[in-house]
Length: 155
Image (tube, rainbow, N blue to C red; front, side, top):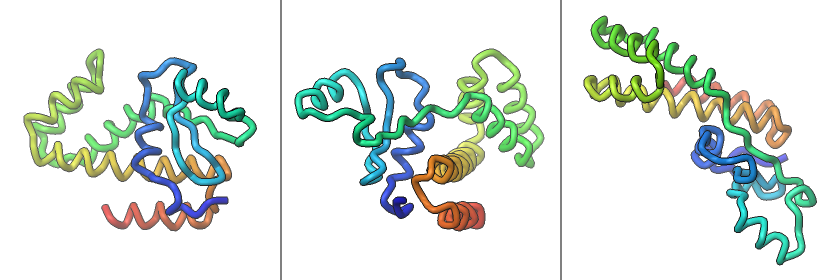
C-alpha cells in the first residue's frame, strides 16, 4: 500500500473526471510509485520498445466517474444555495439538455456562487478520489477515512 501523500490527488481528480478519451486512451496509476500516467498509442509504443507491459507492472486503470455522480453533485450544491434567485436558476439549468454546460453558464451570473461551486466540487472530487484509492486497495482505508474527514471539516 502507498501512503496517501505519494499520490497527486489533483491529477487523480483529473483522471476521474476525464470523459473525453476513447477506450484505448486512459489514465492509469502505478501502484509501486503512485504515479499517474496517460496511456495511449505513444505510451504503448514506448512500453513495447522498453519491453514492459502495463499489466506486468500492475497498472490500475482509472475509469471516469459516471456522469450521474456529477449530476448529483450539482443537485447537492444547489440544495445548499441560500439565495432563491440563484438556486432557481441553477435548478432550471440542470433540468435542460446538456445540464453540465447550462449549470456552468448559469453560475457565471453569480460570481460568489461560482467560487463556492469550484471549492465544493474540488472537495467532493478529492473525497471521491481518496475513496477510489481505498476501494482499489492502494491506500490504507483508515488513512483514507481520516483524510476524508479532514476534507469535510475544511469546508
